[in-house]
Length: 269
Image 1 (cartoon, helix red, strand yellow):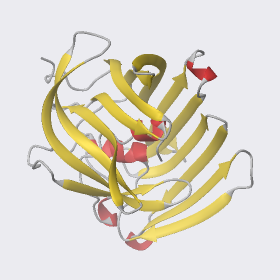
Image 2: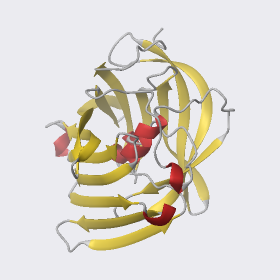
Image 3: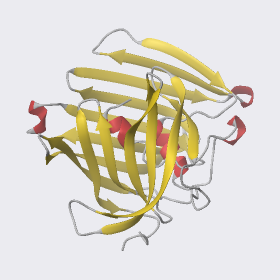
């Protein structure tokens, strides 16, 4: 869970998980064709080094013959950073036009490991039913199933849904629970709302008014902040900065550009 790509996908989880009958939601935030790009930095001997890029894209397509959105996130380390840590991740999600999750895949080469994850969603009798599988370094697939009265989301499909949430009623310190599906398991996760902050970009003079959230996990019974992220305080809800505490060090991600947006970035100062 503590890889750069996994954490990058937690940036917009702004609401609680609904009941299974309401797994879909209205899309007020994006259009087909939206694309974002990011610069990735790593703290190497107290100096921040550019180590790679990430890209995000949403396109309207079909899935099993029905209209759908296909969304992907790709991260790529630079040739220079490959000497220390190889990063080649591709994550893809299909949802219907009401943002109901249909299928999720992850193919990730991180360091010396290559991981494959798949999640298939179905909704029998008002339940959310998952078929999941996981493989590491070419070993046989591990297959799992999960069923709940609550909706489950992979990281991308939850982000798509959360893009339309309204955080104006949130109070500082408020905690948000969500059911996260990955290839090996489906578990409840938690975010903490930290308030609002003006944020300057590292790679430009741009500044944005942002909502600030921290994603936390428990290790040996103690709560640890894994990532703090900054989301534009406007209708677009775009991530512009992430501060990451990874198993192999400290990293940051800054939004470099965005095209095909449905809404203007009115949070830009």
